[in-house]
Amino acid sequence: MSELAAVLAEHQLDNNAAGWFKLPWRDGWNAIELALRVSFHEHGFGDQPWLAEVCKNRSTTQDIYWIAQDLLAPTVTPNRMLRAAFRCLQVLLAKSDGGGEVYNAILVGAFFSVDVSTAENLVLEFRCRDSIGVGAKLLGDGNDRLRRAFTIAWKRGLYAAAYSLPAAREKL
Image (cartoon, rainbow, N blue to C red; front, side, top):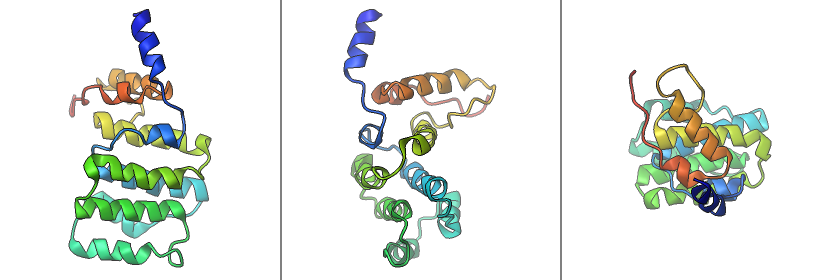
């Protein structure tokens, strides 16, 4: 076990945007929702009801791409994180996510200007959803053990180990 721990420690990544966005996303909706939520928390504004509704309904109509394009203009949306959310939405709609890597390229730039202490719990939450299919918050159900394992691995910078966990059981 000590040898395993030593090898894992060698592959530990930094607790910042460079580390958080090394692994590809499995579901682009999680990347979009992360950017939307961080925008709201970081700036105290950024509530984007249109985008929140698109995410809630998982809407993928062609007109959504062009609405997002209009909203990407810095004069329309000065908030960098919201622009990242709109761009991630376009990538998802165009099915051009590069196996989940393109979301990282978009998000990493937006996240470098975000305070780590503000963002780290939100990144943990959405990465947990992306990896195991449920959020990180303990709910007293049969998935709590998996949530704890994900959180421990993630907070230690063992992102690949966190993403190697099995999916949560849907209904318990």
